Length: 74
Image (tube, rainbow, N blue to C red):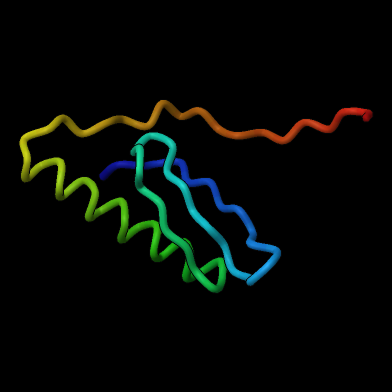
């Protein structure tokens, strides 16, 4: 079992969320709801890792880095 950080960004124009997996370059997805976006993220990660295994490439580990929002005076 592996754990990966996902970054969900609300799409304010059309709704839903875009999802990015920083540890897996190019592994992106989306969903109309938070639940759908997370389910799609799990599927995208599984397919990405499956592809890496099939091509004999190493499986990247998630560094555990997390995005934290910082408020500053503008």
